Length: 455
Image 1 (cartoon, rainbow, N blue to C red):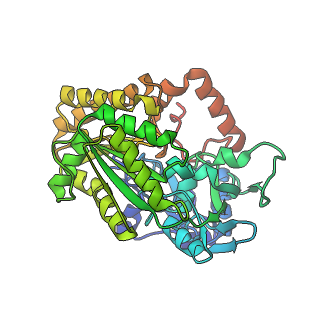
Image 2: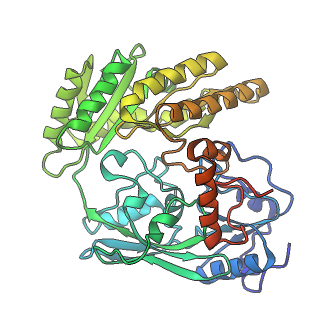
Image 3: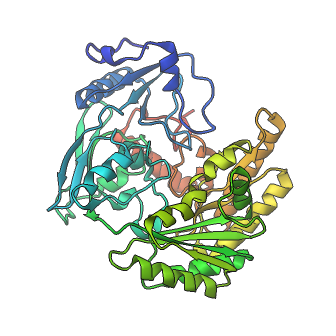
């Protein structure tokens, strides 16, 4: 690999043990690091520009990287690449309460932004489950969502403008700071969700909203999956959209209860968790939500009277990933389906799990149909892992069969590249490749992510 330019060379990670930690993300696609790769920890935009100038001149692949929380293998070192980590670009540059926006570096942690703007009585909506560790740059890369998407939408709904360094080092600005603006194509919307395949985001302008009230929670237990979905439908039709609407299927509940007693009955078919944070009305909202779920067939409903009780009701949801990992290794899925087909999808997953002899708890954001089947298999069991991958394929295909998508918020990454053609078709996939080439003509940006590597 050609020598890094002066200045940037000082940012290279040379300690082999530290370097190895930057070769992988949180996905099962991560394995042994490649034999030849370089890690650069950028400290400012000038570092990013220098790396991309160098990479373009030498046709060197670049893997942009933040906190490495990707579940889809979108930030993994590849042979001969430069891993360009931008966690250190973590300044909250500006918070403007009048115009309702914040300007931040890509390394700002999601939770840190939320806490900072809360001091000004403001609110930033996207809330991935990894919000205490994931960065805004990574959220932009994958168009991340989270538990409150049913009311607040995904990252794209909150990003107004970007600064992006393109291959070759050109700095591009997109979007606007004004409340409205429709001049030219929406390049901001194109970059959000592009998973580092077009350039490196170095500054993000996000919109802010007035802070809501502390959320209150209702929990409902169902003896029938169809009744639970009927409860979701009733809640979505309510005149006040919940701020959170989560579903846990039978296998998820049992996994959580095996980990610790969180008050879920082991013999139920599903649990719904619903919240309201509407200023001045959260209490009446969750009481109404409880009545709606009871009317849909809930066998038991609990309503929190204060924020502390609300947090207690959500605790089982918060420990879910840890509970699954206590049972074995897992392939974490991210399929979004029409809400009306939730029960069909979950039952289909149960059939797939039985066919392949693996455990697949299904949980997730029932309010918008974004579910996270977790294919759990014993550690260090090659046969079980092979069966898990067969189930992974069938779960994705099932999601498409019921009118859904292979990813709702984690991104395609490198993990789901083989299935993207199934969803988009050859013509659309080719059109998107040509669009990438407008920004990245040499194909150096995150090769193997989203699209197959050119042969």
